[in-house]
Each structure stands twice: as C-alpha cells, then as structure tokens.
Length: 259
Image (cartoon, rainbow, N blue to C red; front, side):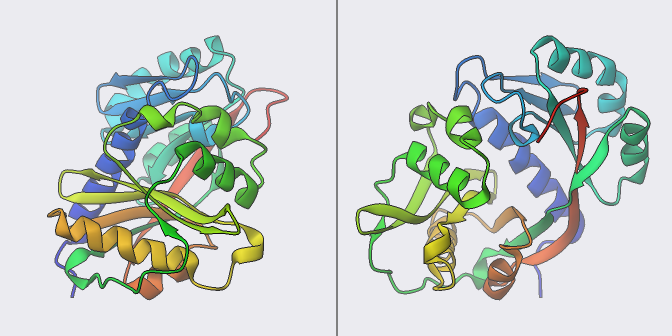
C-alpha cells in the first residue's frame, strides 16, 4: 500500500519538476530561470525550437493566469519558437485557458511515484559507472529520442551543477544507458533516462534505476518521482512506480515554429 497519497504525490512531483528547472539554470549560454508567483519558467535561447527546455512549471494556477501575458512576451522577446506549460490532468481549467491562448496538447507523459521502502537494489551490471560526463548523457538522450542535439545544446555546462547523481552503463567504451537523479525535500527526482537503440531490451535502464532509488533511500529520501514516456512506463511500473495521472505538456508555437 502506498504511504504517500495522490495529493502529496502530486505536490512532490511538481516541486521536484520546478527544482529541476532551478538546477539547470545557466546550463547553456543565455539559459535563465525566472521565478513568479506560483510558477517557475525556463528560457533556453540555445534551443529555441524545442519546448522541452523552454517550459513553465506552476503550482498556483492563479499566479500563472495573472502573469500569462508577461510569460508569453518573455519567450517571444528571447526568440523562442516553442514553449510549453506542464499541466496536471486534473486541472482542466488551466488547460482550457491555455487552449484559448493557442496552446495545443503536445504530449501527455505519465506522472509516477515510488515509495522508497519498496526499493530493492539489483545486482551491479557490467560496465556500471558513476563517473559519468553529463554532456555524454545529454548526447545519449538526443540519440535515443531523435532530438537533434537539443539536450546537448541546452545542457552543455551541466557538469558544473551540484547535487546531481549520475548513473551509466558503458559498453565498448560508449555510454549505452544512463540517467540523472537529484534530491528535493523528501523526494528523489529522476531525469534523462535513456538507452541507445542497439542496447535496448536487456534491462539496462531498469538496473540503473534500481541503484538510483536504492541510493536515494539510503540518503533518507522517502519517494521518487518522474515523468514517464510510453517507452519508459513499463520499466517503471515493474519497479513499483504507480501512476498519479498524466502531466500534460500544453505547447505554444510561433508561426513556423517546430518541436
């Protein structure tokens, strides 16, 4: 039985999502994170065409609504062609307001949470490393998800970030699978989980996840949260992560913008 209810689970996930934005602030030239009343926004001029690194995380819908025009203007002034707002699927009013402003539902990852007293450490896989270059992880994500150098351009200076726990598996001198985790309050948030195409189907990401959450439990964290793609959802479900619902990405594109 879950020890954290859905309401607290959502609070932790949104708080960690916002903290990720703060953590990567300045990870590429011109990248900046701005705090508003009840929201945080990331502007990444190095990747103007990708909303995944030009995003708004809110925990107060009223604050987002009040500042919407200023947020939109900031993205336009920075030359950002695509930006998005993360919306829990239960907040239909915010989704409707965004749609009225021209946003479209671009993706609907699964918001998931794991109570860490259920975490079991798996065997150490061959090629396991914690000495991982964050830029290599960014490039792996670009290769795995076809994002055409977006992560590498956005996170080129991520090596200077503090508090990140990096995990990887190397095969034949190359990074085959990897992820990054960080702590925020009682939660461990997991990001940038990727496995190169030729190495999939062998449980590499699951093994890394197992070590990441076991380490988080030993650091005193009580939950782990993440946003799951269709590809990753079965992996996380097998580990015991449960769904909180969808965390939708409502994207606004400038004329001619693409993502």
